[in-house]
Length: 81
Image (cartoon, rainbow, N blue to C red; front, side, top):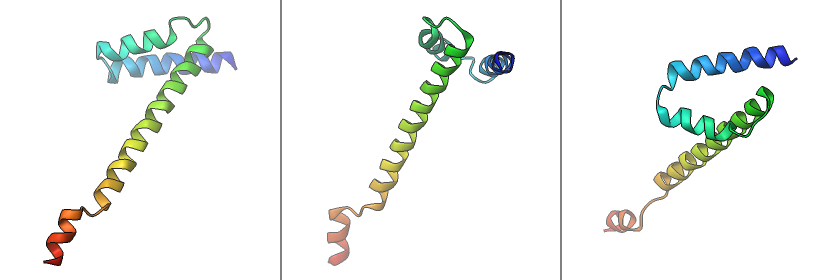
């Protein structure tokens, strides 16, 4: 199985270079995986970081939807007039 993981890491790295050329993303990736010894550990750390980010973004979107769906007191009062 390690050869499959190695090929995935190479593919991810190539995609990162192609779609995320910003130095900040590369720096963050390097910081996340700096202490990692193996490609598998790096892959797991990156996966965990991306999942955490996805969870945070989803929660932010949900809060925005909930806020938009909640009528404001002023709007209700204006409609009552």
